[in-house]
Length: 454
Image 1 (cartoon, one colour):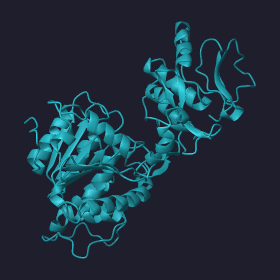
Image 2 (cartoon, helix red, strand yellow; image 1 turned 120 degrees about the vertical axis):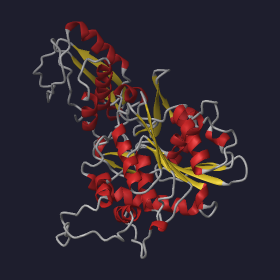
Image 3 (cartoon, one colour; image 1 turned 60 degrees about the horizontal axis):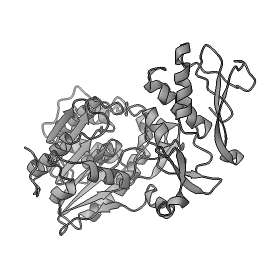
């Protein structure tokens, strides 16, 4: 859908909805509704069937067109489709399909589509960045849904200077302990987010049923939230997004999984450096790592590669990369490409423990050096693991989280698995926060100032 081409929501009558103006023309965006319009007009360079609307639904289409914030034609079109999909007027999946066709905005220096928050919410897909770059004015802006207008960085001066601190790969977002430092949690954000955004929201909204925050329960803990680098996202039309590794299908991480390798290896090295730095300050048993969504997947990969156990692991709404391969090494399945393997030969009774085999494969996937004398004691298998997932997760199916728990158990890890009914792709408040606090207190063994619910 390059600019200049229109995607019609086909109706009984031919009405042309499109957006004109914008940075390329040095003017404000304007919504144009033309009717009647010849369906085969030369101004329409391509036709795509999306669905059919009854005559009575024409007003709903117009309302959607007027509701979505005016912006570049491609993003505006996807926003309108998202609103129609929420109303049940176009088929489920329509918005995601057209979102994948959107080209990165030529007016953005960071590669984002530039879809305002309200449009992204209507789409029901990924959350758009809060700030986008306007090439004409040479500054950042964001859509204020309440005010119904764009807000420029120069209007709220602090953002114009601090926006770069949210860029991927920038310094860690750290919340220091309230009392002398005794413990550390390193938690990774999901795809498209960043350390500051994820960390701020988790520590402010992640309340227990008694109304306590994690910082109150763990006053001696240092909370570390890294930000991934920006990488081309195959799942989102090659847009530049903060992601630990590339992925082709969110709901099927095994599809074309080789696309994940470069990001996994690069991110693993960065995370291991952060872990090594924190271990200069606290003992391994006083360190927890984990993450949400893709951050969960990335931190699980790091956990399985470690040469020692740590205090604990916390994963939310995540999955395990290369799950099938890990299952195969645990089951001692023969690689069909290894012509020297003989499945009929008797198994060596001193064969490596599953945790060792999983570690070897994971280190290979992450492009880490193999260990000279591998042993179960040199793995992280004694690290207690918590995995929580929403039963109604529409982005990362709950079955993927359950599969990760199964593989870790088969590898010798002690895993606490929690599934939350009617919960989507996020952590459940307060239930999951309660469960995480219970896990920290009773499985990891850290002292919690205000005892969580048992």
